[in-house]
Length: 300
Image (cartoon, rainbow, N blue to C red; front, side, top):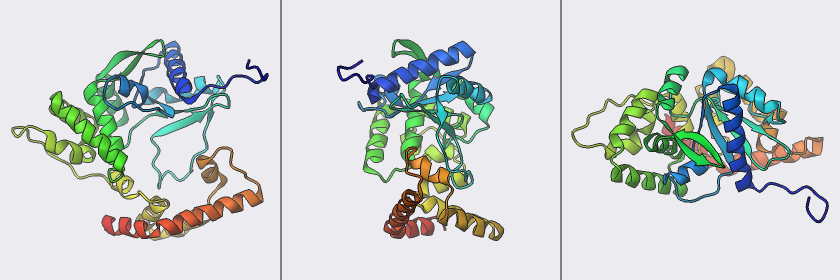
């Protein structure tokens, strides 16, 4: 207890480390294979410059995700509201939060850009994990090559942002210095990530190495193009059948409450509060309109 009589609150860096320990011990107790991606482990491995992580990213065996989530629910964690439109926003993780914790836990069952079948993809990923000491626990994390693949795919989704360009440059130097390009190629092939990672990896491969690069999927094209607020919805509506367009347009104009709560779980859901949030959404949309037009032209 603090001197004021209130319970001491976890700070974000502490919460993230303890969150890793919590999920790791829970998974061990249930016999579930998990490993942690991005976050503090990537800093320990030298894959990222020092930075504070805001949440816990864990990749779980897709066949056991419900078991892990149930274990978290029993410990007071609750699923964060999400947009129910999984056509516009294909799901790759489940995010849970806890009223006493300052961070969320993102439970991944797939990763954007890795488009291999779920079971085969996880098998390839699990075979390329190593142990590190983190938060007083011995936890599994990606090998250096796999860690680079995860971080590169994450940055490639928004590679026009200065921070993402800087991260890709840092990863490129690391890949070249440690001669990891061919290992990256093998991992990308095994996980169905060749098309997505090509802009990063192609120029790093030795001249003698040849690769067959598949075309990026529509999902990946859309993720990369949808950089401005609202552009993902416009892209999905443009690509939808005429039968679905009107329904999707209605949902975009009058979104369900989950959409508002997905941005802020403590959002004011009274009528005045919802009106304020709708006004803010439209303001963001109008400000981003020129950029969205460029996105749609690029997709054509």
